[in-house]
Image 1 (tube, one colour):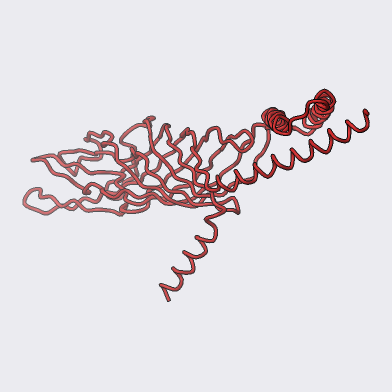
Image 2 (cartoon, helix red, strand yellow):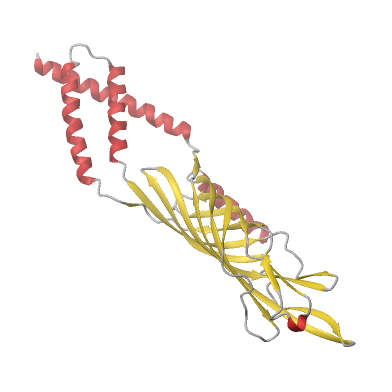
Length: 307
């Protein structure tokens, strides 16, 4: 049963492949992490003040025909905190804390893509452009009536059309809500001991929930850049852990727990991979041939009228 479900999923994914779009986005940004520590039944304390740390990563987006898609990537993480002390009984007030070394985390999830929202209304400018182009095309056809070349006609029409599209394409933005999971393959042990000192690795999660929203700016169909705002909440390997020591010949148990979360803001320039270049080329050639035929008919008609 499991194999049949997996096979059906693969077939559905393969059916969408021809209409999908693959995008690779290197990212740079900042992360603001918040890690809290709790000792026994006391309240949570914040051993390290909030501070911005640099963040780097790379992300791969796979968008389906429907506009939605999945994503996977790698980025840096700075939520872990080294909470060091010598005596567990006084660790609540007598401690030293610092940010741990940067870790790499894997990310994956699902992303929704809204329809593009343009920053300006291009309807009136489009009509003006079409009217001006119509006048220029008519004038150029009259001038070329005696010495007509279908190849030059097609080239000039293509050049004029490209200029029109370049001017008419407005800058737009897509809203991209997203949800997923993050995973750190190699986490640190809960406690490390060095002679008479102890270190509790707070915020040492191995799985986290991520959510956020992206803003993809584009001009026409050309993607310009992305801005991504993300929230992370550690959920795995965050249970209470026990430190057992001896004091006065007796065993003393001290319980430690932590919470970890972060906000991050990143910027990236997407690189898209086209899949149907051959098909697009054939469409361009057919369009060019249609323009040639249309141009020939118009010029021949105007020549007859002029004669």
